[in-house]
Amino acid sequence: MTDYTNPETIVLHTAYHADPTTGAVAVPIYQTSSYDLGDTQNAADLFALKKLGNIYSRIMSPTNDVLERRMAALDGGAAALALASGQAAITTAIQNIAQAGDNIVSSTELYGGTVNLFANSLRTMGIEVRFVDPADPENFRRATDGHTRAFFAETLPNPSLIPAPMQEIALIGEELGVPLIVDNTNAPVICRPIDHGAHVVVYSATKYIGGHGTSIGGLIVDSGRFDWARHAERFPMLTQPDPSYHGAIWTEAVAELGPIAYIMKARCTLLRDTGAAMSPFNAFLFLQGLETLPLRMREHCRNADAVARFLADHPAVERVIFPGLFEGPDKTRAETYLTGGNGALVGFEMTGGTEAGLAFIDALKMIHHVANIGDARTLAIHPATSTHQQLSEDAQRAAGVTPGYVRLSIGLENVTDIEADIAQALDSVGGLAKAA
Ligand code: PLP
Image 1 (cartoon, rainbow, N blue to C red):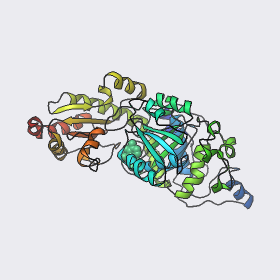
Image 2 (image 1 turned 120 degrees about the vertical axis):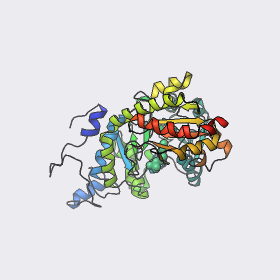
Image 3 (image 1 turned 30 degrees about the vertical axis):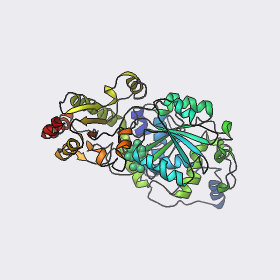
Image 4 (image 1 turned 180 degrees about the vertical axis):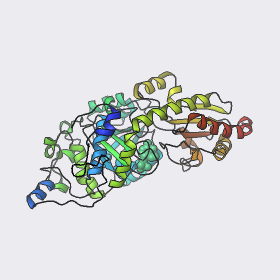
């Protein structure tokens, strides 16, 4: 099969042309829990990883396989793994190389669910997360010690929307022997983290990849570029015999299949044991979304650009947070990493604080009030009283969530209709905004 390199073609043709038995052009949903193993020798070879094939849908599925291969190709990676959610992808990406007594160093600029996972759940598993300000990439070096197993950052964290300085962090990681894991949920196609040095990329497929707000899913893409064996002391889970897989040494066991030790271990041990599998039906829905992802991202970015400029000119708006409007070093970062567009997230601060932010949300007619992003429809939320409600006011401010801050995830409607709804909502709370 041809190795396509253009995103628009990859999402339609990589890894699948037509079903060999039926000729079906759409990727079929293989809705089966298990696969006939053939003769006993074949079964033994499959379990021993002497050959790759289908065994049981908790660990692999031909439907998921096409999604995984297309995502790996899209990001320039060696292989990928589909999981039940973005949270499962992040948890698996870390547990695959870190165990009790280890630590990872993470940017402070994170999705709230990841903050909870890192600050609380990973801690209860004995994995410490050291949070550092990504504004100075050297903070990652300073927080590293002999037990550091990964660096973690988001391409386009909200609410700041300032891209992480991936190139600098990845270089420090290369020097110290620490891989960089990047959450690229908010910037698929428009940013390819592996091109900037990232070693592993994670996604919530729930957002733009699915694109229609129908399913929860996640993905890990392995660049295949990190030399685990060279840093064997740091990565015993990949370079020492694994008691959970009849003593396999992952860097050796799958070497013939390519540089995919990391992702194979995640599939064969963690996915097997924790069971956070993506159902073939959801993989099918993500494949439908993926087919138009490059086109949709272009349109999302175009609409967001127009809305950000519209907001910047509105008297009830104090400040607009959007990479396309940044200046100085933040602008340089946005231009370096967001090469395919500035993303679809637009933040803005209303002059009237909490009261104005809430009134704006309540006045919206077309735009949905939703704790999600990356839908085909435009979505809005007031983070201070919803997604970030559990944080203290100081913690909210540190996270960039001011009382009047509103987050928009710009969709694919005609932009004049998006602007009209925003305009009428802003007009209806104009008095509150000016009272501030
Ligand atoms: N990463 C980011 C940047 C997110 O915004 C989210 C969800 O909002 C997640 C990860 C978690 O994804 P999921 O909801 O699919 O578990």
